Length: 76
Image: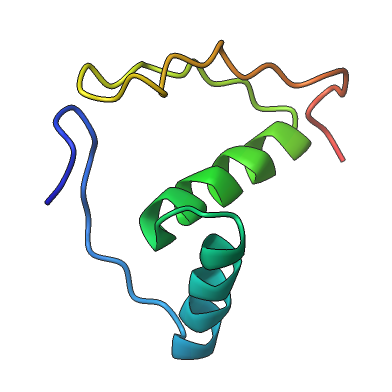
């Protein structure tokens, strides 16, 4: 079931890649979907893209501060 306020979409992904995501998620005690979201946020941060985290009203652990990338001009 999708969380309210979150965008859901179908994703075509290589089965071996999905398996690696599931294994990593299990190691870090996350769902596979939460792991994908975490990896996407991490990748955006590394590229210098700032996004604001909108807390999920039903999730008391989602009140993280906005993600801010340090430095970088966004080119390169």
